[in-house]
Length: 454
Image (tube, rainbow, N blue to C red; front, top):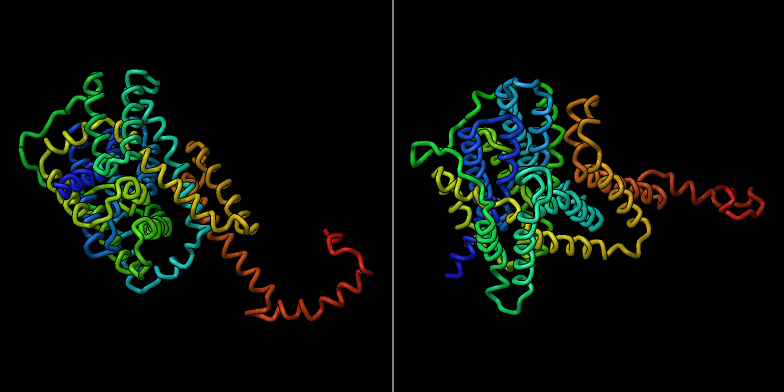
């Protein structure tokens, strides 16, 4: 019985990780109800299969493989460039090719062990910065979602915010309860209760018109044959690094959450991730990547075993074959989903603060963290319209504060290490030359305090 409940809780969590992206992409490209249901079906299927492949063949950790923010951003940016009333089918076909190309690139990087060098970059400074920026990036849509902004219209309505906040409080109280089963199933209790609250207030979304067939198999290349575009191909090459950074960070955080010893699982994970990108392209879905907030969910529910996660993946895959089940799952109100994952993200924020606790007494590292957070959070507030004059390849990077901040922390920390290496005299002879002539330089200054050169 416990395995079944754990599996259902995982299935709902996997669902919440895949609901928003296809709905937003469908709205951006003005897809019909039937096309939206088909995209949602394919996305859930790809999420289930991708997560199942990783937990069995890849990193072997219970981590959601959800739509990647950088891929999602590319879809939205392309849709924004469409002329009013124009069809976006050609752009969608180009994105299929971009996803396929991304899969090939990641496969090559993983097969030739290049990915292991990226793992060395994930120090406490980078990991802690990543986790804090992840929370900052998601805090706005989560809080707005709980308050009901965008659920019906762009305004806050008490009849939407009240049941969502009630769901949040109930999830939090269950998560902090001394009763084991309340604590372990706080997410499932929150989803069921939240659905009931919204049903009581009359805010359950209406079902779209369903296809006539009971079983609907996910369609290969639903948008048409892949179409090559040099701009999207170059964009794919650039965003490969952020995708790999997300995957490595998710693994590092989950290992610490479940208490697993760090092992070299990155080559396997990278190969499976490459396959998952190919699946996303083949099934015309938003590309998936390992989601770090899975660690917060595991921390809040204490579900560390792989079997319930595997069964949850299978349940999501099966649901993807039945349009009625897909739309039924999708009828879970978005404010309820945000209210439930709020508690998980709170755990993730705690993990980020603990990660940075190890560098609190190191002024250099704190400077790197401060600069990176400043750059990352600031980038989150740059309006997308202000990037219109920049090359398309830079837009998904600069429009993603998480990527900007993490890249800044990596570059700054490595640059500082390189500077310290030169100063210590290792590598080239600059440091030894500096020490040799230090006494001469000081005598030439006539005993003036060294700070005077500033």
